[in-house]
Length: 177
Image (cartoon, rainbow, N blue to C red; front, side, top):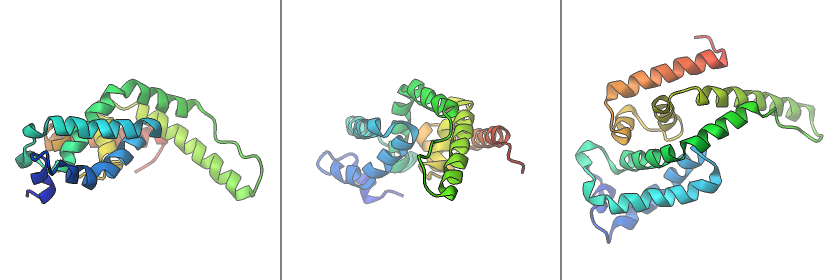
């Protein structure tokens, strides 16, 4: 299905509609994967790359949304070392400190800190492919077909990577099925 936004990709005069329709979503996805400071720059770079490569867009392979997520994920890959350092640092950091206040707020913050540590360590332990698939589904809200289109992989590969990632996360977080 070709939408009006998909059709605007090839037309430099109408490309702004692609930007307007997807910029915030792509920026939020990048912000979840990397520091928010870099999200603006990488989101802008995503659309610059998309504009430069607009002639290679093929709506038959998927819509513009997974195409943009694919570009963003590739740019994130270039920043993967920083992402890994971030997950490892979050895993090492202690729970957030509270300088006073309500007891329940302290309990909530400690519990959240422990969860962030465990989740960050678990994410750092995934392979790049597993992490990309998991975070495109979790953060981007993409379905299997869209993830496959975004990463240029088969649907079966999406399913197996997501299954392995979920298994590893369950084990790392001590969640029983």
